[in-house]
Length: 63
Image (cartoon, rainbow, N blue to C red; front, top):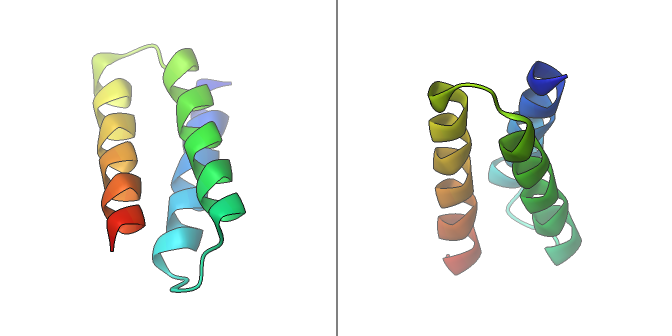
């Protein structure tokens, strides 16, 4: 299950970074996917990767 959630989080971030007109709803969906995957992550590596995705999302929201 964690791998599926991790992939969903990655896919959501890809949609945002590839779409200059990402809506607030898209960004919230990505945040939700990242959080769900983080809560389900079983290894420190998975959690670190998700933290990096979250940082990317935050940077994207500021630009």
